[in-house]
Amino acid sequence: MAEALELIFSFVAIGIYGSEERPRHPVWRNSIRIVAFAGAAIVYAILLAEWDLPDIASFLILPWLACSCVVLLGEYYLGSKKLGVVAIIIMLLLLVVSIVQMEFL
Image (cartoon, rainbow, N blue to C red; front, side, top):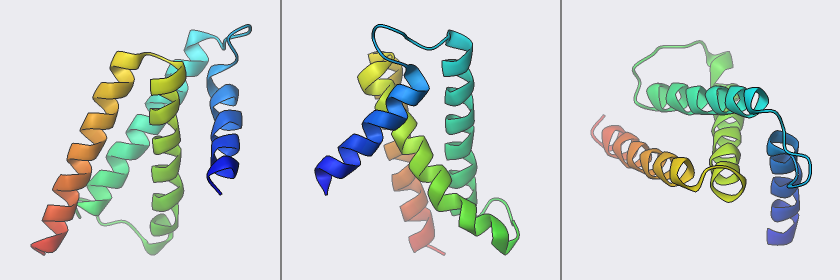
């Protein structure tokens, strides 16, 4: 199972960032980063119940969160290590805050 997930992650990361021989254009990489990080912010805002969205939006939360995690890990392994570490730390902090917030609701 872990090998299958690693294979999927590798294909997605190469699709986003390109290979070492043929890296993607920076505009492509930065637009993917913006979409993924904005998606993570929207997911956390929804988890913190800051926004009331229709039920159809709840189907988008899990895939968008998974996409954001893939981009964060891809950023760490294939992109900027510093940006990847900072983004992963912020993601973990926001996850802890959202869990604590949900316990008090």
